[in-house]
Length: 335
Ligand code: GLV
Ligand code: GLV
Image (cartoon, rainbow, N blue to C red):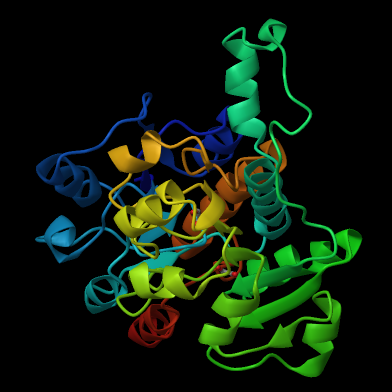
C-alpha cells in the first residue's frame, strides 16, 4: 500500500503534488497549533511527516508510534525536535540547511537598517498623519551603519553570509564562536576577526545574533551582557527567541542604553513581551527571516525530498539528515 505523509501546515501546491506522485499525502489546510494528543495521533498514522517549528516532536509525541520513519523540519534550526527521542525510536530527523542562508542574511540587514534608521517608527508616524504638522531638522536621527563595527555572535553559514554583506558598508567585522574560523573563511566573511564574547559586546556598534538555540545559548544576551554593550548600540536577533532575555532587553531599550533593536524571534513566541510591544525603538517581525518566495519554496522542496528519500520512494540518501546514525542502523537491519 502507498506510504502516508502528513504535512502539518499549508504548503506550496507544487510541492504537495510532488509528494503525491509517490505517497498518499494528508496536508493540513490551515495553519494552527496541534494539541499534544492530536499531534501524537497524526504522527502515529503516518510513515513520514513534514513539520514546522511550532510542532514540538518529543518522546511524548512519539509515544506508542511504531510506524513513523522520518520527520522533516521546515527550518534549519531544530530545537523543536528532540533528536535523542527520535533516534531512540529509529526515526530519521531532517532539516533545511543552506537553501535559506542568503535570504536570511538579507533579512538580518533589513532589520539592522530598519532599526538603526528608525524605519518602522517613522512609517507609523507618517501613517498617523503627523507630517503636515511639520518636522524638525533634527527629528528622526538614526545611527549610521557605514564605517562602524558589526559584530556577529554565532558564525555559522548564516552568520558568515551576514558578515560578507558588511563589505558594502565599509564596516569592520568582529565575531564570536566557540572557536575561530579558518583564515580563508574569515577572509571570505568580510575580513571578520574572532574576539572573545565580552570584547564582541564591548566593541560592536551593531550586533547580530545568529546562534542556534540550545540550553547553553539560553539568555546568552541578558542584563549582564547588555550592560557591556556600547551606549547607543543596535541589537538584531534573527536566531531564536530565548537567546535574548526579552525583559532585560526591553529595559535597556526603554532607558536608551541601546539605541534600537530588530527582533524576528521572541521568548515564548508567538507571544511577544508586552514591554517590547510598548516601545518605539524596536522593529518587530513574526519570525520571517527566511520568508523570501525563493527561500521558502526551496525549504519546502528540500523537506519533501528528505521525506521521499527517507521512505525509499526516490533514489538516493535524504539530503539533510540530522541523526544519520538512524540511516546506518536501518541499512544494517535490512541486510
Ligand atoms: C527558522 O527559524 C529556521 O530555523 O529555519
Ligand atoms: C545554521 O544556523 C547555520 O548558520 O548554518
